[in-house]
Amino acid sequence: MTAPEIDEEPPEHGRYARYLQVLDDVPQSILEADEAGLVAGILRDDCVSMAESAVNHHLERRAAHLLTDAGFPAWARMMAEVLGDRPFLTRRLREWTLLRTIALDEPWTAEELTGASDWFQRTASAAQAVTSPDALALLAEHGRTRRVRNAASRRIQQPGQRTR
Image 1 (spheres, helix red, strand yellow):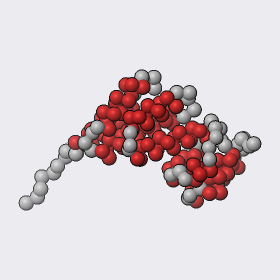
Image 2 (tube, helix red, strand yellow):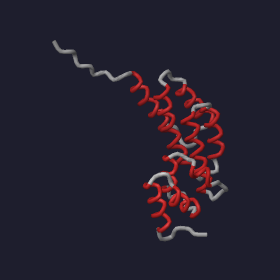
Image 3 (cartoon, one colour):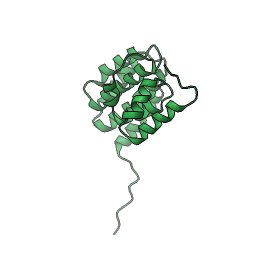
Image 4 (cartoon, helix red, strand yellow):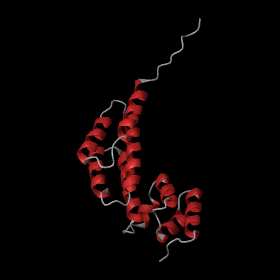
């Protein structure tokens, strides 16, 4: 006797797809309170890892879009409040804020850069918004992985790369 084929996917897969759709449909001009409500609602889902994954997808998309926008600080404060004490999401938001700091040529420390996650170092070494020769040189010399060091070295050597 064989078991019947089960074509149904777990319910959290369907919720995840719906969450991504709802978050992807968030217009760039949405009111912060509305966005905060959507994110908070998703984070109340019983499947914590799925909910945080959907919110991380949204955080990545919005942070990349707002990176050098004047609205980023207010958005980041709102997101920090909604994210609460979720370690992965709060770290990722902090790292997007650091990426913005470097992209805008605002003060940062070597410890922040070298202590950041592999994701951050890969993103910073490849992001066209990061043109800081100091940040790229630090990543080329002290990046955690060969991939980061090589990417930063290539960026330093690109024609038109800003120098001090």
